[in-house]
Image 1 (tube, rainbow over the protein chains, first blue to last red):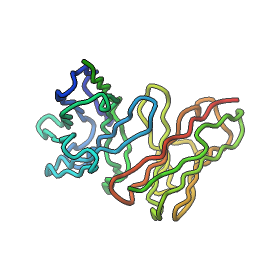
Image 2: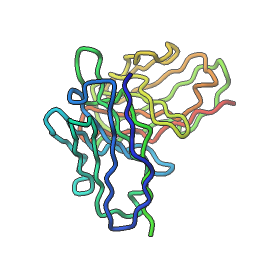
Image 3: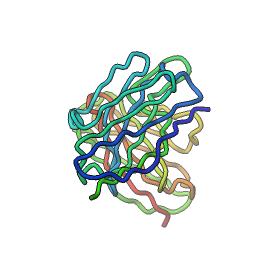
Image 4: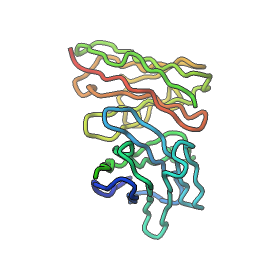
Length: 124
Length: 107
């Protein structure tokens, strides 16, 4: 069965960087888009961007340009998101989520499996 | 960016009741709309895509409708396990955007 396993809670200092991971299993990692979504405390959801692990192509929400960098390691079926120049505003839960697959076609706009989320707290 | 306005922000309903949640897009999104359910401490789960297509495994009491800029999620015969926050999401234009959510509680 499809599973997305995310790395654990991070407590990081302002101005630093953090890299969180999302290990995929139960499907062909290189065939589906992988998205990253942010949920700040008490707030809604923000789409950060996607990576297509098959060729490494990426698409970002302009708001996160320079903040988030998406990469993928095909050998370990793991997607990564690095967040840089962290401020308290970046404190949030970060989810990875797979682009939809209906058994025949792949879609990138909506998300059929989500990881459990990684909480990032930025504090001195 | 396309703004997604959800209403109501919160909702209290009784078991067995029918519930409607609305989502208004700031421009035409051509039915490129999904609905998600998020329970406390959990990740969101896909309920509906393409405005009215039910995701595999989702109970048939959930349904979606709408077109253009106006969309809705309907829950028939509310069950206790439906207590959650519901989000709409448009994927017609980048950046993909979500509504602020509707928190559904039992009366």
